[in-house]
Length: 262
Image 1 (tube, one colour):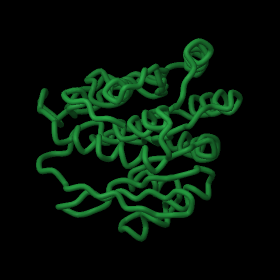
Image 2 (cartoon, helix red, strand yellow):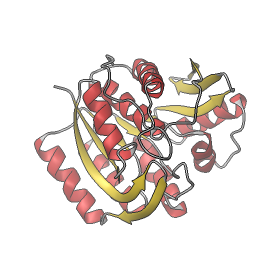
Image 3 (cartoon, one colour):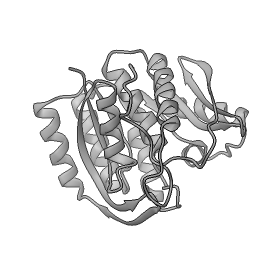
């Protein structure tokens, strides 16, 4: 059975983070394992408190999982502080890790900080060069590249800059219009736009985590980068279509109500 490991933060509301990743892995037929890098007191309304897991314990979790179960793909999400980012990068580099999806989670929808400014630089220098795919939204791409990302031309320039920093491929998300959602994939020197009809209603919680986890699931199953990204876009769109309001805040994605092959 394909195995995928997520290294990310725990969302007590289960809409994003580790919980969304594991639901995505299960829906796509992949055995999911986890390393918790941070804890959040979080609901559909927002993030109330954040607690970092000590970097040494992050490393202990990672070693325990990989020494026994291994992984066919790894993804990172919320890592919070520079020491954790460096610890994860060091451990994965030492092991010659399998395909790695880096989701550079920097802020929650309510603006809560999920990656400190110092950690952003550590991620750019230490983790990006290990990435098979990096999946920032426009704001995260701007922070990592130091350039404005406002329109489609900016998105392509940012994606190519991320590849120049060492990632094998980059997907910059969050483009499009009121009617269409557009993400840009750059891989092997080629740019491809991924389009989907924008669904009505408020944006659900956890779309970025779900998208990156679905890419990792595809890579774990042996898909090419492009095929994994295309399938992840399709799966995430289906999850948005099935989103429901379970709390008083953002809707939560419908990860498990229907199986969609990777």
